[in-house]
Amino acid sequence: MPKELTNTHKPWFVYLIECQDYSIYTGITVNVEKRYAAHLSGKGARYTRIRPPLKLLAVIEFADRATAASTEYTIKQWTAKQKRAFAAQHAVI
Image (cartoon, rainbow, N blue to C red; front, side, top):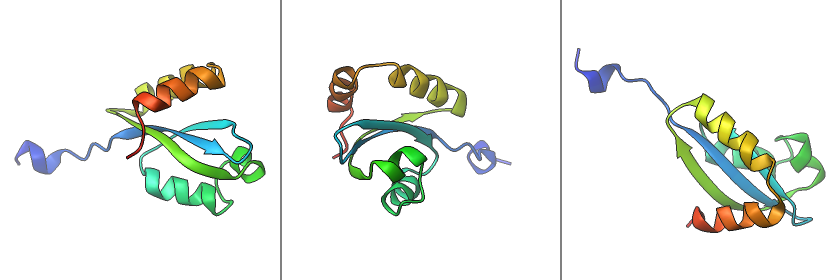
């Protein structure tokens, strides 16, 4: 069977959301649109249920979950200023 037909690999994404209190939420998913919709509807993370999303700031694609999760952890250690600078480089168009 050709490789392109057997490859079921799905990319993972790290995403940053600006919340209504101007804090920044960072998460990972395989489907950004579906996950962002969950955050908007109040069915996402507890953080965004308390602080509703204002806008999607950035989306970065990764080849696997481990790399996305590691990057998410790193970003969560940053200050809001660092997250905003990073988001500016990976802004959602």
